[in-house]
Length: 178
Image (cartoon, rainbow, N blue to C red):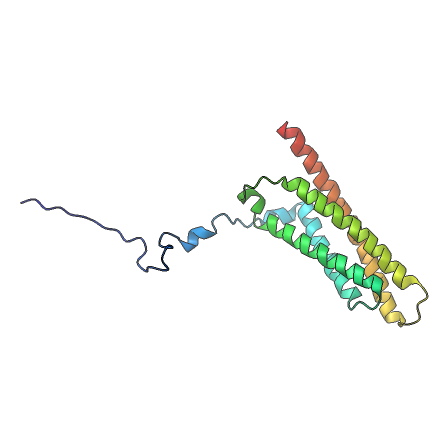
């Protein structure tokens, strides 16, 4: 008499929701690769400097006591959020993991260029709003807000350096791809 043996392997001993039997949670985020080494390069250091100087600008200029400071804080917050998003893109290696038809370098170039221009306008507005002989606020608030404008100027220089480095990367990527 002949015996037939059938081996059945159950890959998921605990069935979950219907339609998710083959989904493994450990494989869901395998595309994520933490890239700390980017922040050891000059562009990574500049991004960290942009974030830190942005926090200093927020701390010095808050709360907004003059209309010029409202604009300054708006630009600082938008720049901080955009730079944080780009930092996470590099930290999690999203550029390498997602195959969208996006020119990442050119996108980051225009984003950083726009932020540098907005920061330049914002620091001028901030310093001009507080450097007038406005006696409404005491010198404590005036000094803090002028320092916020000075740190805004420093961040303009840091963003401009980032624009320069990204532009050089873009030129190199164009010559190697042609």
